[in-house]
Image 1: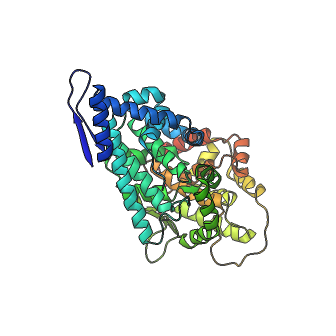
Image 2: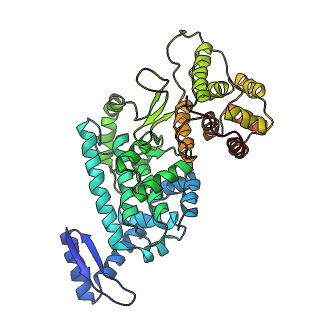
Image 3: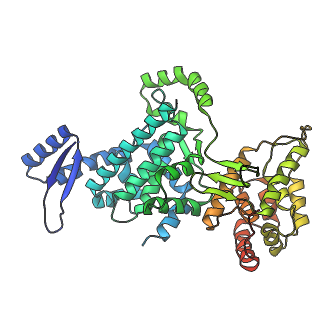
Length: 82
Length: 354
């Protein structure tokens, strides 16, 4: 496991990403070339993966079924939220 | 075992938290999410490995993972998400939804008939009061195979894997039967070795009250007498065997006499071929599920015993069952029965362990 760390201020925060070493290197390289933070590049990469997942009908159908089936449980957990 | 990735987690968090995927992505604590998934992955693999050492765990690609391994991995995922919340809020909802979705994509569905008991379990896991192993036992006995899963899974597999799965299917079915074992959920009717009750690793022994034990015995006797496996109607018949139980008193509060309830149980049963007078009547699948709900009702009420009221309430996890419909037709729907049980317990106090 490699770690890619960055330090920020204001609205950003310190973070440590546990990434595959090769992926961490690629993220760092992209960030350096594009003059962006590693976390920005990582978030953009995740956004692309999320977009693909949103088109996964099977996954979404299972999720909808699950949430509907266990709605009462989720409501109870929501009600008790501090 | 199919693992959840960070994109799946974002979609789940967005839906479970009711904030949508875009908001979930913008609020995502990437480091926390990655830490949770890494921790869950490691614990999940250990669970599979432990299951495999008992000749269980993952089979060929595309085969449903073993029940115990799936439960352990789902609990590991929930615990990791509780420890490293990926969103600022909705911690327990996201963990629960992710655990349930993880089970679904691996071919298992959780029958959480008593949501309050499930919520207490997740809260226990979050606070550290419930050990992961105990939560795993709790979940394992509530898992049932998703009947639609092989088809869903086949759609997701590349052709080569699909062919392999089909080739392995008959052997997988045999192996699955061979691996079947009783869950960590033991019902005892009393012996020299200990009192009667339900024992699980998470709860220890939850003893039956006197009326509850009598009901259990009577339900089995009645089922045997009729030559049937024990079903919900026999459980109701057993519950109406005594006139001083909390269950009977609660029904009377709604205006249903013991005799009327007994008659409903009679009306929904039919005679079968004669059975040997001794031996235990097997339970129908509905009755088996009711046992778990009985325990959950007791836990949800904060009780350390199993009383007749827990049995009565547990019947309502089968809202479509004939006997439940019959009770509802008399005005005893679930909400009214719950209210009546609460009122009766407040008035007469709890039943005492046998």
